[in-house]
Amino acid sequence: MTSSFKRRVLVPHYARGTPVETAHNPLACVRYGGDEAGVEVAQGCVFMTLPGPSPVLYETWHPMQIGEQQAEGTASIIPRMAGKESGIGWSCEGDVLFAAFWVQDQPELCDAVQTHYERLITLSRQKGFPHIYRMWNYLGAINQDNEYGEERYRDFCRGRAQAFDALGVELTALPAATGIGLPAGGVAVYLIAHRVMQGVNVENPSQLPAYHYPPRYGRRSPSFARATVMEGESQTVLYLSGTASIRGHESVGHTLDEQLAITIETIHSLRAAAEKRFPCLQAGRFESIKLYVRHPKDVSAVQAAIERAFPCPAGQAPLLVADICRAELLVEVEGILLARH
Ligand code: 3EB
Image (cartoon, rainbow, N blue to C red; front, side, top):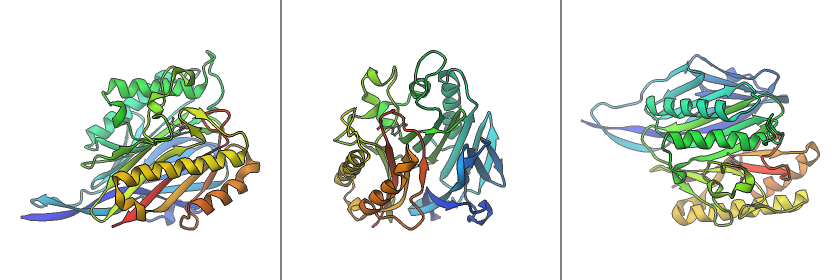
């Protein structure tokens, strides 16, 4: 007998200061704000808390159907499972997985980051979800030096790169990602992964691939793709990495307005590259956008400019005040674009 099952990917939904219980059975809930930090698992859901100012922002993760998959026999939806193993909180259902860790602050991040990254990726593979299509990395005091005089972002990048090396992940297979600051604490990482569908990575013609940045930005280059595409039969989803005012590998623009204009242009050029490969994305709309702004005084200007450039459903473009991984960068933008066929 042949049957079909739903093919799905994970997408976020945002709410400010709303109790988590109102969200419809999410796989995960990431809470931005408060003093404590950590990962817990309860009732089939991963609860992650990152330190930050109030009001708290809740990001819940939900499966969204993008197609159907023919299956032999009676294969149908695989029920919700969740747990916490070796510090990794995880939850899965059908073909989608969410997994996360929190590492306490360390005098040097590299080793702890490598160890936890390897555990995170190994767990994803062992649970049956080898296709990681998007990752997020949040680091306390990202622009400060560690005890050995190395900037903490660069220290982190070394551990992350060593983990991908150790697990045999090719540079071109790295997923889209975000790397951004937290007001305090250690390192938070989470990922979304798929059981059968491999994402297709897209690089930006206006930027050098981050994994080829020269050593002046750190001993190991940042490990991420500019964007990852998940193509279904009924919808295609483009996950854009954190994008900032960088051309080639150099930061450009001194004022906020200059950096905003270049960031917007950079996103357009990434979108154009993705549309070349996936023409259906021309009809794409932003489903959500996440804004990171270094200085509170720049918040309203960033919101206004991005709203104008990239329309997005109400409430689904939250902004976090955060340090960005290069001290001169003032703004960074990530997003998820959805095209119905
Ligand atoms: C850049 O383009 C800006 O280290 O995972 C953007 C997205 C950036 C992801 C990461 C860093 C990361 O290099 C910074």
